[in-house]
Image 1: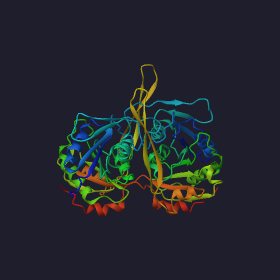
Image 2 (image 1 turned 90 degrees about the horizontal axis):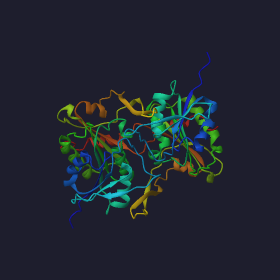
Image 3 (image 1 turned 135 degrees about the vertical axis):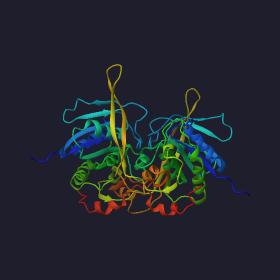
Image 4 (image 1 turned 180 degrees about the vertical axis):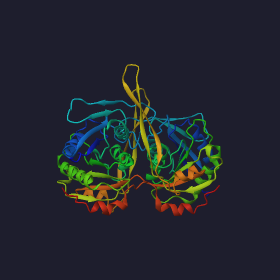
Length: 258
Length: 258
């Protein structure tokens, strides 16, 4: 009996009609059977949000008959949950999320809906990869990234991933020239310094846009920010156990009883 | 010159009018100057979501004159960003989030708005603690937890926290009897097994409620689940660097170039 083709779930956070997810579908289509489940609207910055106080709708997109494709009213993490528990007709072998329009390197991994979909896949025990291109524009050129996306996906299909670990893959933008290669990195220490953009509505009410400046505080050459700044794709293995093990001995010595 | 009282920011994810945040305010009020910034509506399960595609409104709650209190239309993480960048008149010394109505132990830390507020505080470089009571009811009795919440808050004010680390504190529910003590733990390996509750709306359309069963796959006696099951408060140090360092050597040996 021929070995079954792997079942690959494709998700993203920019919404099912974003060019980035189409590029990702094109990249992984030769590698297995495809199931697409993605948000029906942009969900950038949704982090690991799930929908528990509202209902979910799921709609099949029927104008693309090559593989099953569903939009969901929820978050990227909802999409993974709906796909795993309801839409997939056999166990999912791999989850790919993206390709995100914009960077998810460094601390952005925590805010990213794209990466949260991959993290959710990892929680469900499925090898998962999030892909992001460091170009926020709708018309971003995903073509130079495709051979790398396809190759890394093949590598994960072949090698699997350690338990509780998924991959955060960021691809340098066009300003860095041709892609120089791939580096396995750690997450750079960085933060966003917020600036609230204060405005006044037509009725005189005050409102804000959340905005800010990304501040890299990490000069390490082993970081994702360093790799990207030098034109390399960064691959950061990400874990779902976020216990700070190194802090346990110190805190255990506190006087903990009132 | 007398030493200034510490400035303590109080946030939550159940919304500014939840009994849990009032219990937390009561607990920390003797310990410093208080600033309350919390969502204007329940935000459970919002994880580390931020509001980037919509505007934010901030309203001062004026019927409580003892300390400044603001509601925000955004997520718990938005509340921290608004407080740090806009509302606080001097640097914030400590952030406390909660007391959540319901557990945020184990893998729940990743979905939790309460803990994401603490994690955001940690990203901003401020010592931060999330408190949760393992009782989902609106009328949960927070009183037995208060001496512990107050004592742990004092300990953090006194000792600080390691850089990049915040605390996830869970308090056993009333079914466990009187609180037996406090244990420093690691996050138990667990997941939610989803069950989509499928329903039909009055116009014949299908919709879903996301529901599921919590499955603890970790029998370790050093976990938060073990402490809570035995009537102890669990304190898990949580880190914002989620790099899986142990996986770097293995993945570095893959053939990474297409």
